[in-house]
Amino acid sequence: MTSNRSLSLKLKIWRQKNSQEPGRFEGYRVEDISPESSFLEMLDILNDQLIRQNKSSVAFDHDCREGICGMCSLYINGQAHGPDQLVTTCQLYMRRFKNGDTIYIEPWRSRAFPVIKDLVVDRSAFDRVIASGGFVSVNTSGNTIDGNALPIPKEDADKAFDAAACIGCGACVATCKNASAMLFVSAKISQLALLPQGKVEAKRRALAMVRQMDEEGFGNCSNTGACEVECPKGISLENIAQMNREYLSASIQNED
Amino acid sequence: MEQSKFTASSIGKKFLMAATGFFLMVFLLVHLSVNLFLFGGKQAFNEASHFMATNPLIQISQYILAAGFIAHIFFGIKLYIQNKSARGKVTYAVNQWQAHTPFNARTMIYTGLLILCFLILHLKDFTIPIKIADTRRFTHYELVTEHFKNPIYTVIYLIAFILLAIHLSHGFQSAFQSMGARHKSYTPFIEKLGVLYFWFISLGFSTIALWFFFKQ
Ligand code: HEM
Ligand code: SF4
Ligand code: FES
Image (tube, rainbow over all chains, first blue to last red; front, side, top):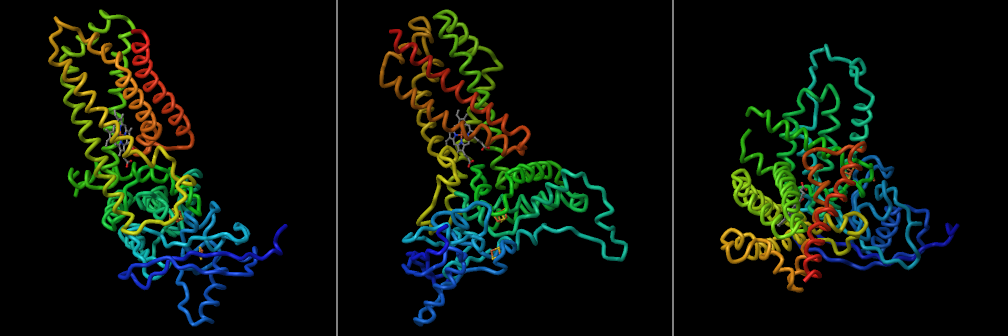
């Protein structure tokens, strides 16, 4: 194992003051990085260095640092969440890099995800898509049905559960050549459409969420499959097919 | 259903791309079947060609075909422009395309536009002359086989079908996905069928061109 060998790296990081001003790459060096540290810890070390030098630290998103919240992002050397598959940036470890490597770090690039500062982008477009229909209306008058009392076929439960694994990170949008949000939106639409509680509003939901997705300025799907490759949660393209079916049948039956 | 809303939506546009794509793929099969009569000699091909030129059903479907092509091209270009602008003004400095986006899927607009160039050439050289040809002077058979005596023409023809093969190597299974048909149980079969389809189409048309080029 090379675990004791520390790394010295060149970083090219996108710096941008705010959404108005144009950004640019700045070069940095970090030394003595443990291969066992995570990518975000490496950035913490860089920021520590910058603060000591009285320079502005690099802004980046993160929260749980255990791969479940969907806050971390970063396009690392040309790939969302870096070179590993099925992991988020917070779960990416420095042993994936070699001593002396140059690492390009860029924010998600999408018209619908404007840069707020440095590597932080505004992903509230996803929140608005969810708000437009990514919910199940329940009766709260006291006679709510216990979810476990409803029989659900095993395959449907499994598929819904797989779709529910989406953490809303936006890597699919970042990777897609069209900056399309269809993997994300389809995960939400399928998850709910597969369950009896969600079926009731399935048609209205499909129409509303797709309309909101389009209004946010995300691109169209070209079925390249890039989103599926880079999604840290392994969300399948089958969800996009399911969304297409839901949307097409909802459009035919729509009475508005 | 409000038509305009549907065709303005992302999924609606993809549906139209796929529907016209399917239609064009069926057309190619019909077209190739007629061309294969070239191997049967002058009389066989001229009869097949005559049937196509006079059968009322075929005549009507020609207009549908033209509409299909125009819609496919129009929406293809529209999608390309929208998708380009969805990335925003700043693009990635480093992008590992080869790691996530297959070449054929990335180049649909380029293969498509080059096929369009060939289509225009084909209209000028075959479709229109066949429509107005004085068949007493030379028949459809001669019109076609004469062209393949020209090496440059034959090479352009072959390149066009390589491009079409690339377009279809993504397009075939993509059209199923756009229509909502994808499942791990049958998608591998659709993908194999797509490979079979584009080889059959491209090899079919190319073999005819090469045959008449070397036969002269
Ligand atoms: C006989 C000729 C053609 C056939 C059989 C054909 C077939 C197809 C098929 C099956 C698809 C997949 C549809 C989908 O993903 O749902 C497709 C996509 C596409 N075609 Fe064609 N096509 C032809 C000619 C053209 C031409 C002339 C253009 C010129 C602009 C073009 C541009 C495109 C584009 C840009 C796409 C991708 C759209 C997207 O997914 O974003 N195609 N084609
Ligand atoms: S589908 Fe995957 S890549 Fe897209 S937001 Fe959800 S978890 Fe992230
Ligand atoms: S910080 Fe929560 S998923 Fe990475």
